[in-house]
Image (cartoon, rainbow over all chains, first blue to last red; front, side, top):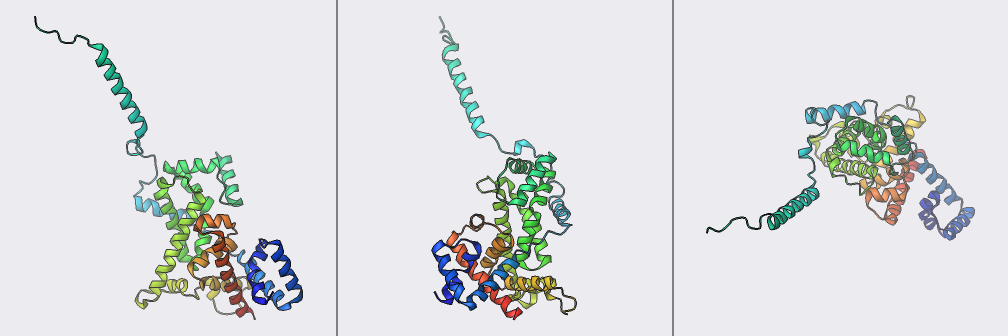
Length: 120
Length: 210
């Protein structure tokens, strides 16, 4: 293994995702190569330092968003919307229509057998 | 109610990818335009979104603007959220896309000297850094702030895709699976790009610390 091949494995090594055989080969190389040991240490330090960069949102973050939303919607964003303009339950409306038509059809079929009597 | 909200906060701290009944209820309330649910979503995810955007852009003012815009977009488009992805994935994808778009926009403005301002220049330039990193005078700089500045400069020197991977993996400490869900990239691609980005950051730090 040369320096370049060793360096290619640094990420997986640091993440703990390196395959057992590659890990063993890298460890053997590191035991004999001070240059790669130094490089790995520097790599580990750089990656580790990135974990300290988390940045909390500023304290006025929520009020600022609330203000923006109120301004953009002129105060109409929040609050329950009128359901008529919400989602119409088409499947239920269709089912109700079919049932109503069926009832009407059956009523027409059986309800008025001699509806209009012919003139004598 | 307070108990369930506390549970949701706890879960958000442990990791953003745990789908819970509480989260689903919260999203349902958000769809009903419940202001309390809106505030709770910002409290739960505000830090994560801000941190992601800030480290991607490198300018606090720009980051505040984008992070606010992310939440406004989320609330405007929440009806389109069908739960196919986890809410946090969906939210962070919006944050990532808006950050990448802003980086491109600022880079375009940086080439136009007429429309350039100091903040945009810092964020768009490959040497853009947060204020702490740009203050001159070693006597006022503490070591942590110096390192923060160096790291931010190193991140800003990466392209936007590499920046995103470094921030998601090494700053926000997300798993490769979570990163794959946000970026829609296969794990192999994420790993190889991330490795190149980490090596570039290491080289940059080495140059400044030797």
